[in-house]
Image 1 (cartoon, rainbow, N blue to C red):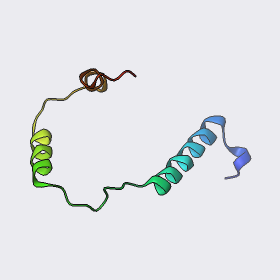
Image 2 (image 1 turned 135 degrees about the vertical axis):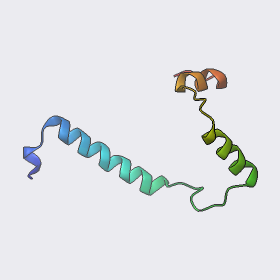
Image 3 (image 1 turned 90 degrees about the vertical axis):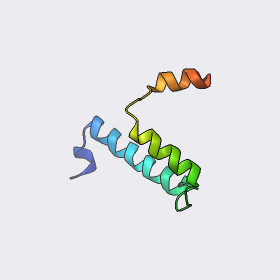
Image 4 (image 1 turned 45 degrees about the vertical axis):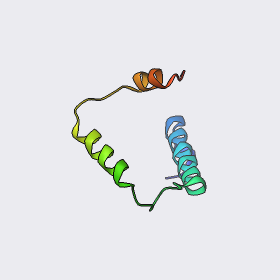
Length: 67
């Protein structure tokens, strides 16, 4: 496919994906590969086992954040 054949939406998605990929390369995950503390591991397992879920708005409210 030629770049000139892309629709505006396809071009936007392509550029967004390229920028996302590049940012991930540059910033990376500083915690990648590090072991989880046993306390964190236990809390994570407990959280995943629970059916209780919060929305992003609820979390923001609890933390005093504004969108």
